[in-house]
Amino acid sequence: MVDRWRGDPGIWRRGILLAVCSVLVALLMILHAHLPNRIGNAGSLTETFLPWLGVFVPVILVAALVRRSATALVSLLLPVTVWLNLFGGLVTDKSGGGGELMVVTHNVNAANPDPEGTARQVAASGADVVALEELTGDMVPVYERALADTYAYHSVQGTVGLWSKYPMADSRPVDIRMGWTRAMRSTVNTPRGEVAVYVAHLPSVRVKLNAGFTANQRDNSADALGEAIVREDIGQVILLGDLNGTMNDRSLKAVTSQMRSTQGAAGDGMGFSWPSSFPMARIDQIMVKGVEPVASWTLPRTDSDHLPIAARVELGRG
Image (cartoon, rainbow, N blue to C red; front, side):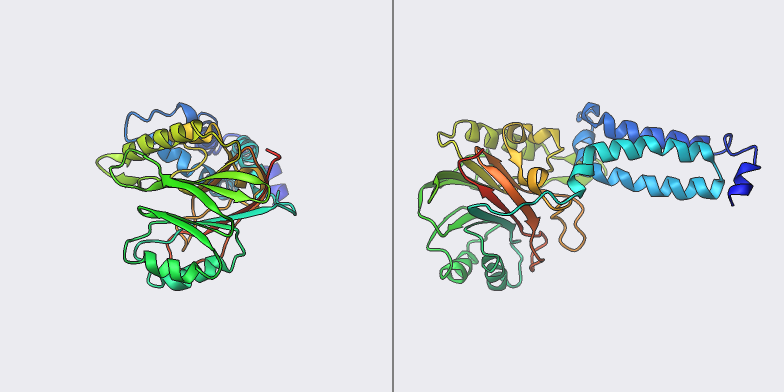
């Protein structure tokens, strides 16, 4: 095969279109922050699934081999380099040992057919603090009963709740401009001091043919959540929840600009959490401020359409 390529004078002339595609993929990853959101929130949509642009690399690679195009093969160095620069650090396992506090967040799905089993599965993770989102009124007692033996303290505000092995105080709703409660905060009194724990379920986003990526309500709620966290008096802060957006999404900058993702800092792999049947994006988040993440991972699938995610953190070292 090498001899066939070596004796083929057209290997540098063929595949120009493939080479252009390689450059475009690389430029899209590099310049994603400059894609406008004015039309269908195209920028946020691209940023939600940004790591998946790497799928074009093997497609172009196969096409380049079929076309016997050296130009296309060389051009692949550009998107490969850019992808590794953006996401290579997420592929490796950065988790470590230790951590005084283990936290878990899970969107349990309002239509979950087995809420009791889901609750017991999450409790079996060994988490000290558990946040649940998408709690319906009739299912709240089921979760409360299933978690009562493991967690002595809890608070449910609207459709979100927090369960803790440590005492909780000042539990209250957080206004994220929705008209009903889908966010809360509580002070968890750990052996290493107070931690302000926020639980949030930001509005869902939709992809519509006539409107693109509709996320205005989500974006407004993210701004309100960010403002609430800015006003927080306690220095150690943990945010748990379904933010319906990734760390790359510029529209969540009110939150992401002031907090660290445990997955980015101490995760094992990409940590995609949705949809649970074939995870494609990490829209469930554990973020911290004033504490040090040491490990972050996804938990086994439950009967929800989201995967639970977990993290261990060191307190007083952020």
